[in-house]
Length: 476
Image (tube, rainbow, N blue to C red; front, side):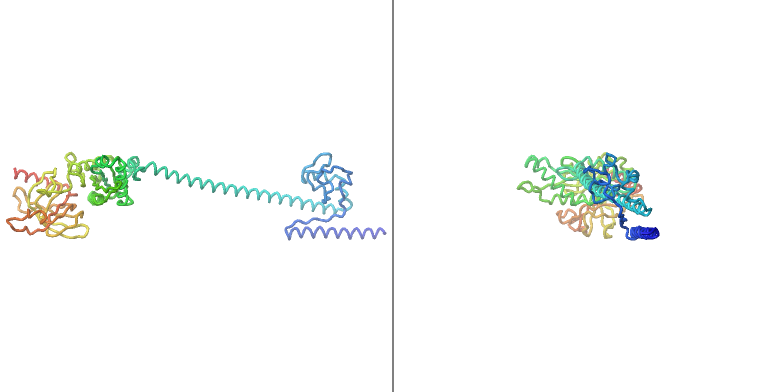
């Protein structure tokens, strides 16, 4: 072959190699894959170096690029990975033989080495991503487990809280919680100026139940009574086992009149409920006392609300049990009997002085605006009895006008007193054997009605007291 032919052949080879390298590079860019240049000058390194170290990873390997294989036994010791040992490999006669004689072969192998390096980096990145994903999954699983444990812990904390504030026998709130509740509701009532009522409840003759049927029977009565209280209070109200056979109901946004209605309904439900004790049915009654925070003039501390309700409860016990008494703040030392049961055997004897008089009254039932009128014949500072022509609904709140004549007889025109009251009973006169007939003739009225006085202005209250004093002097 002539020199000219050799030059032309070398040029053709150079062109072909450059095209191959460029094609591989374009394919790598377009297809985002890994492409390697085919070098016909590769040799077997173990033969070239007369190597017999069969433990070398390059020994008799199908990959003839030993410089790309990690951990080869060149220089009588294991080498590092491709990136670390590549600088030394370029000096090796195996690498020089694969690239000598043509600069394009060197470029081709450099391209291969770059592809390998990038591929290793991609594999390393993928591995790191997979490790991160696995760790994230582990963290997510751990986080889910922690959240589950926290939810379980929250439930147990709620349960522990419930156990700490609930009575074990009745399931009602216990005394410990009541102390927190009392202060909290009192402070709210004081701040936002709404009425707050407290009802104290005590089972009548509870000791007799324990003595007759045993303490287990007493526990059964307490449990059944607690169910009644739970079913008959609003969500805003709180029923509490105060201790022993005593219970408390806290009623926010409830004045004394509405508290009395609630208490009387509870008392009636309890008295009609068939308590089951073993195989026996036992009739149970309760006594109730009410105190209401209206402003700081009647109650200055939260504890006073309970103290006054307990006083009212004590009065209910003294007056025969199975009744409700509202504490009267006008005369705390003497107390107040707010429920009438007998007069001449019909109206209860009040601790307040009363006068026998005859005054006209006019009133309106607040719930339905029903109007009524009559003549009051028995009047005290806490309530009155009057004769009426129609039956009125018990536990209704009423607005009254009392027309009080001048006790000294100096003024002919009667003074009008405005007051709110609670209708505590209404009975037919015929039930009392004609006691209210005069001269053998009917009085013209068919019903005897008892009203408890609730709210009165200071001015009207002072005049009513003045009227009592004048009437007592006249009677004396």
